[in-house]
Length: 102
Image (cartoon, rainbow, N blue to C red):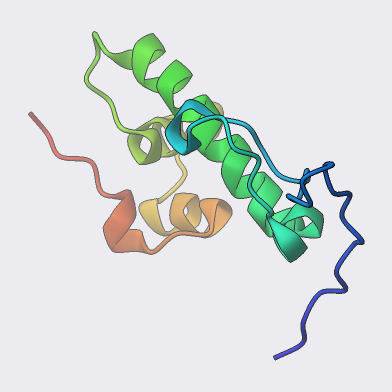
């Protein structure tokens, strides 16, 4: 496994690392996030997690999941598209794209 090159982190006067984030969950302590700071995958995942609450709030009344929204959007914009085509377009398994008829 290839390791990311670590960026030299700054230190506070007490020698504690100052890279990373401050948050309520860590008592306000700066956490050294090492190679994660430069990882595009990590940054994308953090962004994804940050927008989840917005999605849930916007669609709470409809009780729709993110995957359902994606499939319905593809179907709406591509009349006559098959489930297989929709799943392929979204990069998901066909079984994950099935919508329950409630």
